[in-house]
Amino acid sequence: MSKLPSLPGKVWLVGAGPGDPDLLTLRAARLIMRAGLIVHDGLVDPAILALAGAKARLVSVAKSRSRHTLQQDEINALLVREALAGNEVVRLKGGDPFIFGRGGEEAEACRAAGVPVEVVPGISAAIGAAAAAQMPLTHRRSASIVSFVAGQCKGLSEQDWTGLAGKGRTLVIYMGLATADAIAEKLIADGLAPDVPVAVVENATRPGMRVLRSPLAGLGDLVARNKVKSPALIVIGEVAAESADEPLKTLALEALQ
Ligand code: SAH
Image (cartoon, rainbow, N blue to C red):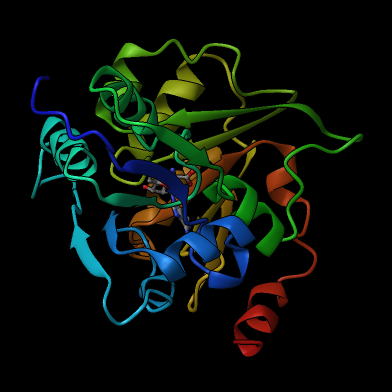
């Protein structure tokens, strides 16, 4: 640590929200507009990156299920290195940095290296999708508990999902497309009724957003038949049927864009 410059820079862990640039916080928008260096995920919408100044350096650290450009520890090292060189780094992440964004690990790495770090919250995909689809995640009639779960293979096998879905509860699954079929099977095996309503929200708040509905037992089929692509969320529970009598909602939303 003897090489520490007297004035280290700073890392801002900034939530970019679910896609629509209008859903950025004012703080996030200001930081993006004045940033010299933006290190961003693949999920950050190009319309948001377009807010950056002409001189800003944009570094993509996009990850995907099969292809990793940079491993997480390399991303941590990049943030720390740039900040120790005196730079202010805007680390821009889809949704909220602390919901399935590994923002916690990045904040830890900064603190461990003595780099000042600040977190700017963002609208998480579940919140954005619920608003855009007019699907309340809680409702006095049908749900007073909401859980966010990671549905990728690790989350599926290592987490205990018992009790997260069912009467009075809404379960929102992030990163669950590839395992949608297995998720439905697991929940039904745990005792959930096969006809519990499910909604899949693809590209929430973005152009081309789709809301697809089915009973739980048909989830895998719904995803396959409609060729649903990432990013998408799966919402399981009575609220998933809340706006089912207004199927034109998504069309109306598209027409606005
Ligand atoms: N930190 C992010 C989540 C990162 S995990 C947040 O708070 O939203 C990435 C997953 O988020 C995707 O696989 C998808 O399940 C979900 N997601 C992100 N943006 C989305 C969008 N616009 N529409 C639907 N799902 C989205």
